[in-house]
Length: 370
Image (cartoon, rainbow, N blue to C red; front, side, top):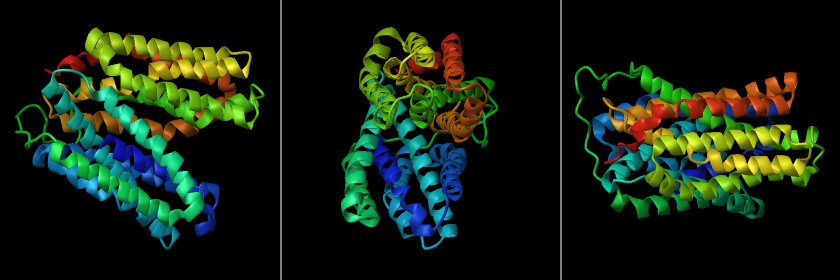
């Protein structure tokens, strides 16, 4: 399920540039389309936790996974700009809801096995994203947007069909009085703090994805090829570490794993911020990927095991806060970097990860998987 979601998101990336000539729009309008996708995801996440609590995790995950397949073709088929906005919002809503449901399912698997598997699950998302972006770009270049979208839809349906027979039963959660399981936004400060920590963990990832190439090119003089390697190295080390993160967490515990990972991520970003040459900054981004890789998986496990709430609802809240930050982070980081430069910006993000390390004990519920 994680691979199917990642495959679709990866395949979406090469579909973005052709939207400009197809609909005769500019970059500003395209940015609003992407924003509509993000807003659709965040708004849907508000309700997904309640759906899981009411109907059970397995049917909700099944429904959204099957609904994900046609969303990319719908974007390609959109006949007008308003229809494109609607299709993008629908795509975001379905993908975001599936994101919540599959993370809730991963928490159930962790409890069943009595050990962590969340990092590897996110590793499969990264793997799916890589395949979707790389092969998706190749198919699009040779056979066009619609063929790429239909091939992606078929691959998603195939992956979902393989997964469906093996999903754990997950009956609806009983509503317990006093715990707020029936409210849209839980009134639990500790849960919202987890959401804030998830936001702080997600923002550095977005900052490297969106701005590392510009930093390497503008401030360190890297050429076009070397500028793109900053995020490539970051993504590669992050994917590798996600498949190793569960073993580390099972051995050392969630709190220690989170604390050390955040400090490694902070050290990598700080190295990139102070690097005198592009190759050293790229090394810093690669080192940061080792630390950032397992931050969000630990946060989702902590949310899914948060006392007093069904896993789906707690994960929905934490995911919503984290992704809401991702929506505003790229523009905010760009504005800050324009005022103080990328070196100071990446240094500031390193300090945010130090704050995460200091608050790592807040994620102790991630170890409650038995």
